[in-house]
Length: 268
Image (cartoon, rainbow, N blue to C red):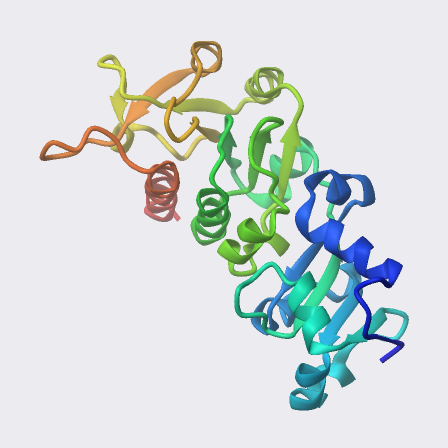
């Protein structure tokens, strides 16, 4: 290990704490924290910047210490200090600082990625929902996830944990103008389907998902804005029985994405 830290007054502790707790710090430094051994082993080595370990963890997992690439800064901290920098109630003893990847819409619709299938998220607020959507996106073969600028930070620690590693593999970006991004995608041949309960919407299982497509999902409580809905080519809904009026945003996005995946598999 490079540096041993036992005091909360150490300036490096302030830096890592800000990275864990503040989206502004993550955006400024273009880094994000990843906590837990299961997530750590999935981090692409080229994106790993720092590793923080508690004394107890380092003693219990010498094999992990040996796996830290040369050139990556590592810090050994006392167990009480690690508990302070951790975002979880039961710290696992290892926290990595990872470099944010930079994606573009062009990456998401590139020919070598296959037929584009994207998810566009407007004002999504719940970290668990976003994490689940990213995880489901990987399973369904989604080629990219695009968030409006007022959505939850994709590098929020709660989002990261919910992705179960998909954050490292699913292309994603924040759009400063989601309507403009939607128009650019349409100009590139991507058809946009807004998940909407409007009476004029069509069932999601009647769509030709073999064409380049994007699924538009709105805020958990308010849904899509009128302006964003108008930017879509069509509205789709998920037929439901009983008295249920709507589904959780992550559930809806996942169901539609996997329907698209099912349709595409049927013609392979």
